[in-house]
View 1 (cartoon, protein in one colour):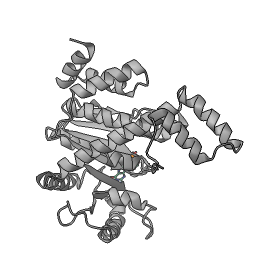
View 2 (cartoon, helix red, strand yellow; view 1 turned 90 degrees about the horizontal axis):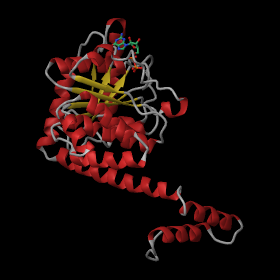
View 3 (spheres, rainbow, N blue to C red; view 1 turned 120 degrees about the vertical axis):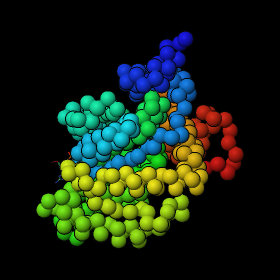
View 4 (cartoon, helix red, strand yellow; view 1 turned 180 degrees about the vertical axis):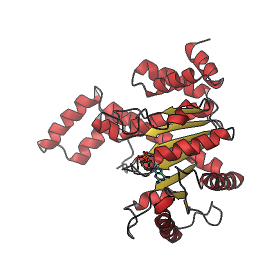
Length: 331
Ligand code: GDP
């Protein structure tokens, strides 16, 4: 038995240390680790019945509190829950705003839960790959709900939407009538908007915010794969744990309908193709940064600078050296 087979077997049996090690392996930049990671991932296909959920919300809306309450509710019902956090800020600041040990204190001690902060310092493409592969490993390890958390800044939501079955957007009650500057792109990928903190003095405000978003969602195009009423907005309180069971029922309904209609299988197949293309793009970019292409590129850049080649002709020359001659109509 090779080391990878052994790790795969232990991971499948639910060994948390094996899962943690496997995730470290897919996060590694070393070439030999990458080769082992690819073997491991090939040996551990994504089980169909794992529900992967994306969750986004700006800092302070209550993501940790929500995941803690929601996760504990699910483990209480017999589910096994994995939480992965994508934190693009960690690449810049060097510290992770999501990696804080005190987050999700009870859930992190729950034997039916597995929490993993994001890998730091990597370009977005790298973070996306690692998170997607980590999610696959969690699913293979028997976690039937995998939550992937993002902070709602920048591009990471779209990436996460490409690796999940369903997307939740967490919002706080809005002060005035502003829609909290939520980017249209995020609204468009949200299947369910959860207005958190619908408790105490904040409750009336939360109800108003919820109604505003329900209105905004109605203006978006209804997705043909979804039942009546989706995407939808609803109120929850992560602290008082109200609305969480209803939210879970809505998630299950949507997921079941999409599975029954065949949409889920198609979506996952499309996602696999998306990531294949993304891997090709990343691999080509990596080749550009390595010799001898890098030297050739620098050389061509100098010739473009001196006006000896046009940018387009120089680019074509480089691509042809890498991939062979292309058809005349290629860009
Ligand atoms: P995150 O930055 O999105 O992870 O947000 P946190 O979970 O750390 O919560 C930010 C603040 O909001 C904390 O002070 C929480 O106690 C508070 N908070 C979170 N959920 C609720 C809720 O349901 N109701 C109220 N009133 N406060 C909440």
